[in-house]
Length: 404
Length: 220
Ligand SMILES: Nc1ncnc2c1ncn2[C@@H]1O[C@H](COP(=O)(O)OP(=O)(O)O)[C@@H](O)[C@H]1O
Ligand SMILES: [Mg+2]
Image (cartoon, rainbow over all chains, first blue to last red; front, side, top):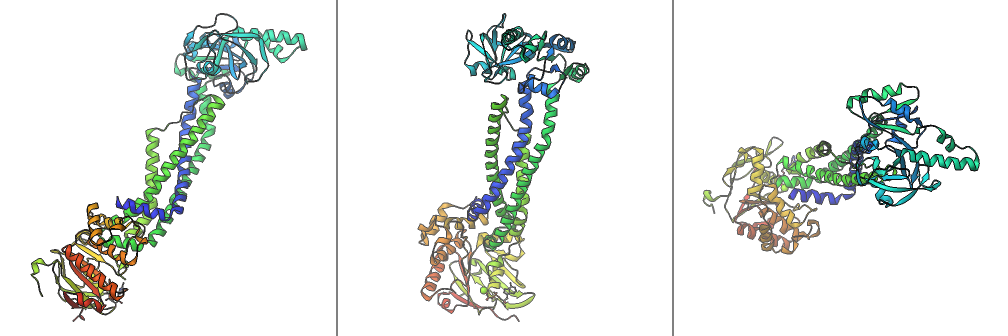
């Protein structure tokens, strides 16, 4: 205890040096911890968001785009598919259930998704209150959308054109809330569900009005396409289907099949070098902090020859003198770890908020026992290495220094 | 003048001091009993500090035996010798050597800690009070006067209840009045604690305070 008091007193005398080591070390710890935890949390958050969707079938194009648009509901659709063709493509014993989805409108930024009741089965979602739609312009709200829009059963709302808030209002077509879903933790919570026929109806009616007003438009062209939808989402009966279904669908001439888990793994693959770079940078910072601490400690051990010799004169063994260096390095490391932990918490909370705002996905970063053990073990190792030379220097102090 | 050797806290026999493999001086055999003050007198460079190192288990003599509190110092392992020094020998240096970075109290408890003994707060209180420096307890060691530092150094030497206190040139930088005060302090406090006292010095002003005087001899 007295040695910790001594180490602390010594540190206070060279606080500038110590603070530098602590801050650089903390930045390193935070970089490593944030990168490691974030890299783990991001796919977890995505997996949570894609819920029960194992497969999405859309028009020919990028599989990742399809996942981002129709499963994670982050990006805009790139085209339309024939519901008949897509549903046929997923008509397979390996598929448990499938539902078409039609995107195009929103309510204050919350997507309206035209679909069939099978969607509840795909997501393994359940109605918390009310009922499923059974007519035009009836809506069932995801739990988050309902809460955020403040809509209750029996309330009415109007959709707006496009998938982002601020589009042209379809105010001739008010929807009625007939049901609210139980929270699933998936992207479905942020969706307003309605019958796929309703979406078509709204757009056909809108198209008629537009043709009457300006002649033909894109909207009108899309509305003319028979049985069009944005995509079909499906759930597998068996996990092994993942090895066959996307490839089989890709082989068709008009359709793309994408598995969210494959696409997100691929996406995370692009991130990996970045994560590794940040981790390496963090480790470099920790190494610089440790080196700084070592140099600082060595210098102060030299300046403290007299004190160290005195401790020997007072009966301290050589090993005990080494402890002075370790206690001091340990205090620096502990402070760096605490500050680094706080920084990590701040960074991850910020990332969580930013991601939730931008995508609705919940990062909810955590650390596994393994990761924590590595972090603590690594810090301990670096501390021991940093203190080793100063400790040796301290241990070799000769009592004679005092008696000259 | 010779006391019963059984009571002796410090005994030497046939100690010959050397430097760089050459004999430097012979130390007359010592018998120091509790409460006794012995002065080791010698000119500068005669080997007094070397003698104290031999007595304190810091540097081995060329020949002879040193027995502190019944234990032969130079037959112990280095670690055991460190422990013996910490627990049974109090050292007072010419320039006190307090640890500036910490408080007076911590300077005292450091003695217990280095020796692997429990650092009792009551012991700190007792020593600081009996040396009339109780008010310095929480003061940092570099914020006290020279005279106060002397007292703290003496308190630290006594903290672990040593059998013998060895002081190296404690008065060489002091004026007459201060010398008198320090000697009285050393003598009274070691006596009160039941320890023996050996003062190595070239300062002839110390002679009057001594119970016994020894001088280093040239080696035969
Ligand atoms: N570290 C040392 N290495 C070699 N010789 C030393 C050392 N310290 C002192 N000496 C020599 O040993 C002799 C005795 O020194 P010392 O014991 O310090 O004498 P004193 O304390 O009586 O002044 C001196 O001649 C001195 O030059
Ligand atoms: Mg000397």
